[in-house]
Image 1 (tube, rainbow, N blue to C red):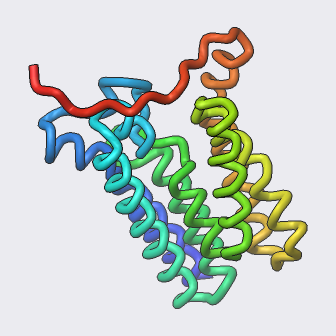
Image 2 (cartoon, rainbow, N blue to C red):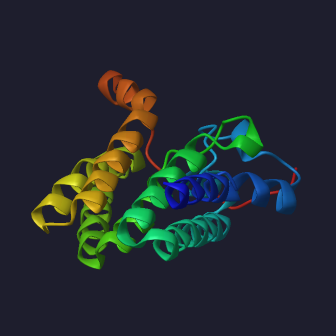
Length: 200
């Protein structure tokens, strides 16, 4: 139990390191949450500042997820890894260091999929970019992979801890996109257009 607690606390703290906020403040002296979609994630970084900052934010989010799940695995194998991953998802979405205003869990969810089974990530990448080619709406892509993630974990017969982590991650991502779902229903969701950072 103590090992699970340590994995959960450390995973949450790792997840609470909001890469998008830190990068936007450090590189541009702004808070990305005050612009674009208001989300502290890689997609909004790309939308507001350009693809390179967006990719950098994704890379940093990936590193913290690997660290959280890797530490969990060292503490208690696959179960500890799953606890650390779930806690990292929570920290990313509701970071203690940034007024509980974080991202929507997509970048962290991608690494969760990779750590569970690389085949799941490959499937999600195909679905994400296939959906993007058809719609150009990132929220539709994100919701698609959020639905497929737990299904894929079950289809690939993952152990119970990993399957539960996949289900939990998918549900969190869907919950974080509830405002996007409403805009999609109303036909108001915008297509993704990355922008180059321009000085006033």
